[in-house]
Structure formats: C-alpha cells, structure tokens
Image (cartoon, rainbow, N blue to C red; front, side):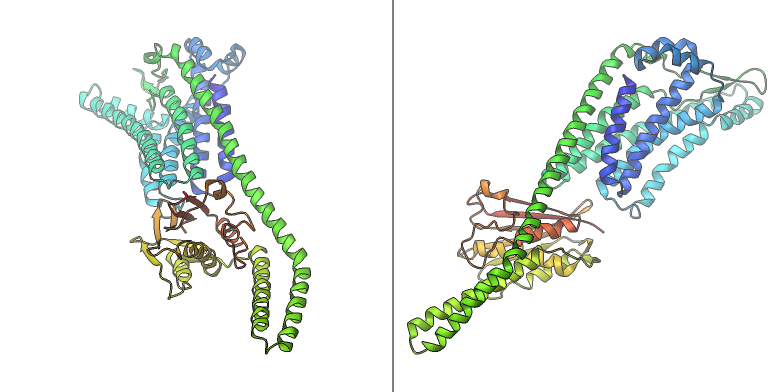
Amino acid sequence: MMIYVTFAFVAFSILFMYRNWRHVSTRFFSGLILGWIISITSLLIYLSKFNYYYNIIAYTFNFPHSLWKFLLYWEINHDLIIRFLHFGILLFIYSLVCFSLLISRGQHARRYRLQVTALAIIPVMQLIYYDPSFQKWLQTLIFIHFHQNSFIKNVTTGIEFFFKTANIVYGLIAIILLAINYIKLPKIKILKNYMLFTISFLIPITMIHYITFSWAPQTLVRSTILHGYFNYIMPDVESLIKFYPYFPYIVLLSFSIIILLIFKYNALESYYKNQNQTIRKTMDTASMGIRAFTHSTKNHLLAIRSEAEYLLDKHRDDEDSAYSLKLILDSCSVNLENIDKAADKLRNIHLNMKSTLLSTPIRKALSRVPSNTNVEIDVQFCKEVPFIYADNEILSEALYNIIDNSLQAVREQELGFIRVIVDRRNQWGIISIQDSGPGIDQEDINQVFSPFFTTKSSIHNWGIGLSFTQKVIHAHDGKIVMNSDKGAGTKTEILLPIF
C-alpha cells in the first residue's frame, strides 16, 4: 500500500511542478519528493538486513518475499544506507517547512534567503551528529575518556530529544503557515482552490511520514566492549507494532484522498484552461472578424460621410437638414474611431516590462478621469506599496477601462462613489476597484470579459474594453475577478505578482 501512496505522491508532484517549475517553492516541493523516495527506499533496504522485521514490512508495505531475500543478501555498506536514510528524512522535513514558508510569504528566494538558511542549520547538525563516522568517533572518545559517565549520557539524550522536538516543530510550522495563508488569501476561487488542494495533499503525506519515522533520527551505530568494533542496531519501531495493524487503513485513507485530489486538481486545471482557451479563441476570432469587416465597413462609412458632407454643403441654409446631417457625420466619425480602437486593442500586445511601483499605473489611469465629474473617487494605498514587473502604459490603459466602466455605472447617481484600494497580500499586489453602481445580473457576470459583450446601449460602447483588460492582466501573469450583485454595485479585483 505504501508503494501505491508513493506513486500517487509522485503523480501529484509532477502535476504541481509541471505548472509551477519556474517558482522557487517548486524546487523545495521537488525536495519533498526526493526526501520521501530516499527515506522510504533506505528504510526498506536497512530493515531488510534484520530479518526479524519481515512480517511487519510485508504487512505494512505489501512487500514481496523474493525482493526481501534479494535485499537481505545484497552486500551494501551499512554506513551508506544510514546516511541516505537520515538525509531523506531530514530533506523531507526541511523541504516541507521551506515550501510552506515560500508559498505563504512569496516566491522570491532572495528576500527569504536568511530564513531558508537559518532553517537548514538544525537539519545539517542532525546529519553530522547521526552520521555513522561521527558517531563512531564520538562513542570511541566517550568510551576512552568518559566511560559510564551519567552526565555525558544525559547530554546525548538531551541532544537527541532536542532534534526530535525540532523536527516536530518544523512540521507544525509548515501546516500552520499554509493554513494561515489560506485564510488570508483574497476571496478568489482559483487561488483558494489551489491552496486548499495543496494543504489537503500535504497533510496525509506529512502524517504518514511522521508516523513511519517517529523514531527518527536515531543513533543506529553502537560501540561494543571491544575497542573499534561497532554494532548496527535495529530502528526503534517495536513501540509502534501495536499501531501497525491500523496503519494500512490510514494509508488507504490517505491514498484515497490523494487520488481524489489528483482528479480534482486536473478538473480544476482543465476548467480554467478551457475557460482561458475559450476566451482566447473568442478574442482571436473577434480580431479576425474586425480585420475582415473593417475595410468594408470603413468604405461604407466613408461613402456615407462623403454623401453627408455633399448634402450638408448643398443644404446648409436648411437648419433642420443641416442639424441631421451633422449628427450623421459625427456618428460616422465616432464609429470609424471605434473600429480603429477595437482592431488596435484586440491585436497582439507587445509589452515593455519594467520594475515599477504598483501605484504608478493606477495613478496614471486615475489622471485620465475628467475633473468635472460629480463622482466621488476614494483612493487608498497600503503603507508599503510593492514593486511589480509591468508595462506602465498598457497596464494603466487596462485599469482605466475598469475605472471608466465604473464611472459610467455611477454617473447618474447623486451620491455615486468609486473606491480604489491598492494593497499587498503575501506574494500578490492587489488593486481593488469598487463602485456604487446598479450592479450586473448574475447571468451576465460570466460574459463581461467576452469581446463585443456589453450591457450598455451606446454607440461609444463596443464591449472591447474588459476583453482587452483581461488580456493585459493575463499577459502580466496576473488574475482578474469581477463580483457583482444587482443593485449592490460591482467590485473588480486584480492580482499581480510582486517583483
């Protein structure tokens, strides 16, 4: 059963790393995989040298007898196995806490290099202390100079107790960090789901690992009464024998949870991937459609404008006719301009990315708001505005589209307001734009980012702005979510990775 859990662990790990390989936290996640495989493999090889444990191993790990006999007679250095065993156990624990730290606080290793280095001190000390060569030297020294000294025995017992306690604390810190991060995450479904799946996946894996290696680390080399001779002792797993009858059921439960998470993770990935592909195809189709009918439409509009100009010149003295013809000319100009803007916005976006404060593009967007508007705009910036990697011009254009939509929504209200909040949560810079407008129907909220979709009846609204905005935010590796209730206003949250 443990072998199946390992396979499921590796499968989920590949899914996670494939999507997030460029993140620093993924390297520590790979350390989890490596630590799990090395520790389990080394434990099986080491226990095979003590034939006494075959029944426990066969029951717990569903281990074939033929493979057990092969390992039993396999001549391999015991010291090497012990080193690999302790290395795998400590690598798993260290990678777990570092992964949780980086996931919770951000993906930038430079900012947390000191913490990551500090966390490595205790595992490295354990590797040195429990290394067979060091133990042989230490026990020989104690045998020669401090034979039967109770104080030295108490010191070594205290050191081992400290190391075991530290390993438990590392595991608790990791789970607590992930739980706190889940609570503090913005209420964005995709982020919440990813973090929930990660926590649900790590808890059973961590539980199994800590149960299996509850005895570790342990000094597996003991000196004998003969100077220079040492025995390799069995790990202290006998105290867990009464627990082992229930162990396969715990493993089976954990295995079921992992398999369920793999399917859920894949389903979630497929949903958002298909959603993004649908939007991308819609935008590509819209762009092709714009290019296809632009030439023809422009020709018709130019012909209408030409005829209107001719008639205006001919009937200039007729005020009613002149007024109507001027409206036609204005309409032609607006539509020609909108066609050019739509084609420009849906074409491929070329970004000039630079490090910039998150407040810079939002200030630039707000500077375009007409000064004569009667809408109250409340802008709030966090104390430490983070840096992002962005194209200021294009990002400010995308943000202005949202602000402009809010302006149009509250323009008719006597006490309309727009609230813009710039904040930072963990590894994300967040821009929240909320208005007091009439809101959007629930059946329309999922279509607001589709090209040419609009709830406004005006020749000035082609339904291109939010499609362009979403494309820009995704090009910045960000996320955008819009929430609205009819009669309760609209709130748009934009998340951009901190640089």
